[in-house]
Structure formats: structure tokens, C-alpha cells
Image 1: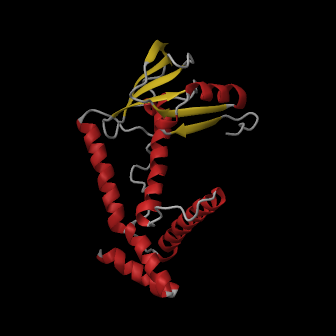
Image 2: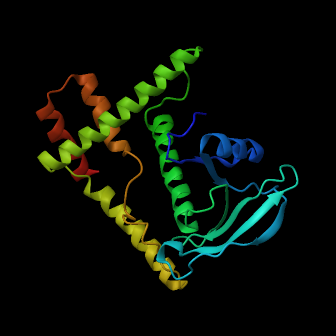
Image 3: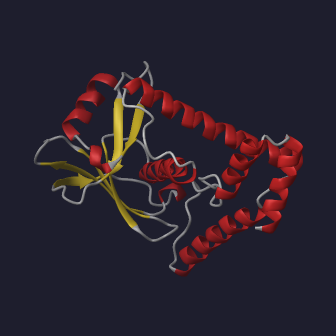
Length: 239
């Protein structure tokens, strides 16, 4: 853990298994570093009072309560936010030691963390990277960096094929749009409103299996880019 640059605050969006309230309080005081996490089911809170927030603000749609709490083990005051997702209707509870960010923004930030988490699923299940290549910390760091590099290069390649050769996975886009429309319809039926923070409800968080299998095959075959691109166009049109 490092110190935040002068005049800047750093917010870590953390897995619920990593909550150490006293330690996060020390980092806040000494380094300008804050945390946001899902609340553990076993946490026992002492309620101190409500935090006022603008319920008319569209950003805060879904926020049920914003409260000051503490727990017996830490005696440190922090925020406890109850939230019902406008898209799904599911309820969540978040804890944070940042007192100024709007509760709707905090809930959205945790969702964005989950979108990033899905990228790890791409590494494991689509790129078949399930084990470390070696035992040393240096080797594991190198493996992580190479995986991220390979993933980002694939994103760039997909973008280039789309913008310059109009090779687009229309079926995947339609499926994403359908999921987005279903979420909107579900929200309307239950009198919920979608937060404006969900600017692109149809955004994909993972590369498709089709694309990864196509790329792996043509790298193995040492195909020309022209031949490989036309092959991908056929794959998208057929399957």
C-alpha cells in the first residue's frame, strides 16, 4: 500500500474478504487512502445515525439508506450503504470510510469492479490460464503482465477489425442489447428507474470465445491477415 499523491485521494474497491477496518482507518489518516467493499454478512454494527443524501438525484437511484455505523472490534466510524440495484432489484450492502462521495456513485463503482472481475474469467476459462508458470514472485508478475498485454492486444485488434474492415460480431451485440432491454423492462415493471451512470447498459465486459478461438487457430496456422480477417467475417455471419 502506497501513499496517495499530494492533493489526491485514492479509493480501493475491495473484495469483502479483505476488510480490516482499523487498518483502513490508519491508511486514511496517514496516506489519504480509502476503501469501499461489500459488507460481510457476519458483521455486527452499532448504528450512529443517518447521513443525508439527495433522494431526488438520479445518480442515487436505488439507494435505500446511508448510515454511520461502527463495529465492536474496531470502534471506528464508517458508512454503511443499503442499495437496491435499479437493473435487477437485488439488494446489496456496502461499507466505506469515504464520507463525501455520493452513495449512488459508490454502488456504481463496485459494479465496475465486478465488470473488471469478469475479465479474469476470460483469462481462466477462455485463455486457459489456470496455473502459474513458475513459483517465484518475479515469474508470477511476468505472467500477469503478459496476460494483460495479450488481452489488451486482442481488444485493440478487435477494435481495428471493426473500425477499418467493418468485421463486427452483430449476433453478440444483439444478445447484449437484448439483455439490456430485458433489464430495462424488468425495472419498469417493478417501478424502478435505471441510474444515468449506466451510460452503456449493453457494454460487453468480456471478449467472445469465437474471437479468441479464431485468433488462436490462425496464429497456429500462420495465416495472412487478409485470409484470417475474411475467416472471422464468415465465423461471425455463420455461428
